[in-house]
Amino acid sequence: MFLGEYKHSIDEKSRLAIPSKFRSSLKGGVVITKGLDSCLFLHPMSEWKKWADELSKLPVSKSDSRAIKRHMFGEAIDAKLDKQGRVVLPDRLKKFANIKNNAVLLGLYNRLEIWDEKTWEKYKLKTEKQSTEIAERMSDLGI
Image (cartoon, rainbow, N blue to C red; front, side, top):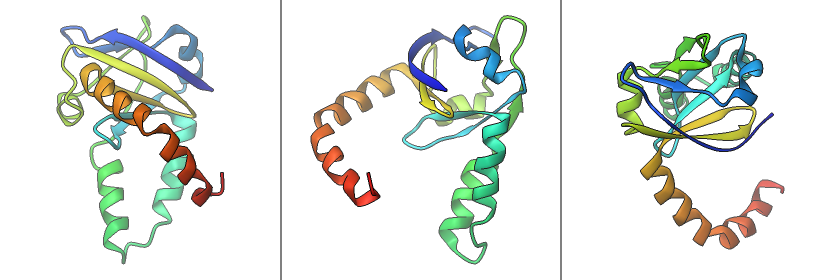
């Protein structure tokens, strides 16, 4: 289970250190892809397979299904952590998420999100101000 917020810098070789407490869960490899809200998703390989199976069931006849599949699969990469627990972020994914030198990793139960630090701070401030309204809408989702 991934929980918490962690700030790390990106080195000159585009490597991002993964928090040590998560590394054992990622030994089987990871998939990094475009996420939503201008961040990247990092899935352990086992969780990616579940997510990919669900996405692959979406009907190809629907344009939104095709669009989300292209978004998630089109530029996804599979990767392994190096001996120091780092993963390389390709330039095209860094550009998508506007990640420059400093990143924030967020633990979201079964995946990590990777954010540009400034983008995350703006997003977090905005959603914290709306937290009551967001919580009220959760009943529409059955929560």
